Image 1 (spheres, rainbow, N blue to C red):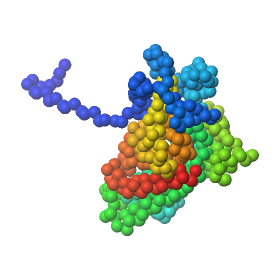
Image 2: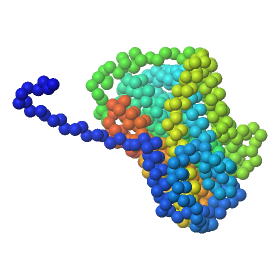
Image 3: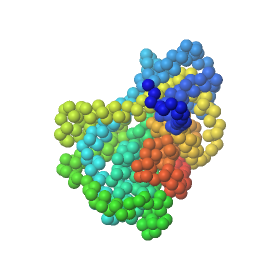
Image 4: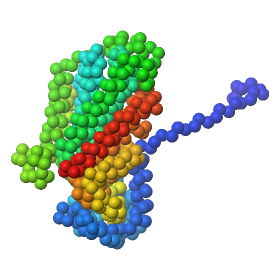
Length: 511
């Protein structure tokens, strides 16, 4: 029964306008799957002749009949996620399907690797060692402003380049913002320290499994190929980024009126007390042991995948040294599963807690793993309808005659809008590399350079695009306007753009 007084007019509230949110990576790839499937009806089928290694031979493209009926195409669409996981490519026809006999075409190896490293990272965080270690570093350097910024950014960048440390940084704003305010800095300094510190590491990923690993697998090269170029990029670009943040921080400390973000009420009065009150617990012997195990695990991963003879001699065809392991995703997946168990045993988790944590880690990382599967399913549709080589041929003319340096730069530029449309680095890599890698062969450029140019484009975009949780979530937690953050970061983005272009061009010529 209504309690409204007689004669009272009912006031209708205007309906709230729904705020647009960018679709998830899974939704984007589902739409891409449908779009590619539809375009396959319009794009003519074609093929290149293949050499002994299975690579297309430039200039041999010719039209072919795919022989697919409408029912076959519907079957490919329906089974695309399945084929993306464990589809097998028939040795004679080249068709991919779950019941074929031949070589695995799906991304089952990469899928399991992502799940395994997710379990490892989750177990490590459950020990509290990494959080406490970074917290202790920040607290010990709290009275040495520039050194604090350098220390935090260097650690974040190192974690970013080896394991894609990014979303995990969202938990550190509650600690680092008060520390920066206590030292006379503004909230923008804290924001730049966190976002740019981890972001530049991911941009210059050396062995990051979610970027370099997935892209290298899709390009059919070793994870260690190109590590020298990426290592040099990491050193230089990390130094430049740290210097940029330190320079701004010093300017704000000398003259607070030059702060881009300004100061909220109480920022400058209560920050010191808040920072002092948040002293983290000291590192225990157990924490130190876990951190050592983490360092040794990633160090061994790097050792196991790097082609040392090629890296040292500069000859891609050099005879491997006896100490080289040549590991790939199956061995690395096993390594991280074993390491996860070892860390859990050392941390005295007990059987039930360790099992539950590993399962939780696998569950947390199922999303990027599924993105890889969906993206691989798109390439299966293109393969079975035989339009991959047609797309490759359409770009071949643009590549022919260009210098290797210019080609590498173009790969970087072309991937910028793709990185915005497909915010998942792993999905972007799986989708783009089947086209970009053969193009590199045509241009006479190492596929490792293409991987480096691709990940640099993805990493550069993720430093500022509003579709990433790291950026939008970070500025929200720091209480800094997104437009203000863009004002702060755009000169650095321009400088990084130039430096990346120089590095990939140099890498193309050098290799």
